[in-house]
Length: 136
Image 1 (tube, rainbow, N blue to C red):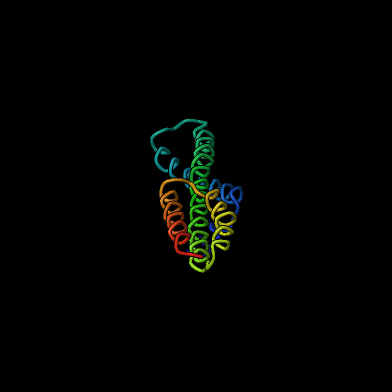
Image 2 (cartoon, rainbow, N blue to C red):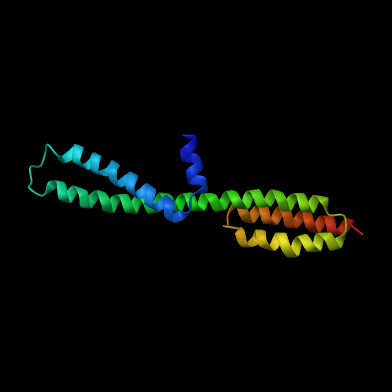
């Protein structure tokens, strides 16, 4: 399980898409064939099952790969948010805080996906504004 988790964290979107599509195609073929093989005695049943399995494998592979991609972006945002918070805490002058705002905070804004990220951005911005009032 650890190897699978590590692969999903480090693999690119395309590599994840291809791997998940293959795995899901195989699983859906087994599932569809297992359910309908006794009920239907058609000549081209296995070929149709293969086509349906490939289509569903690619579709669900794309959905899951995109979900993993968004999870990676989310994780990257929260890790970088901790770095920015550390830099804000360490800033001792207004110039240092201004550099943090112009460089790291703007980069963090670009990484934001909305929702809880917006609240984190507001929190950090409020901390910076409050700290500016008390610095030299």
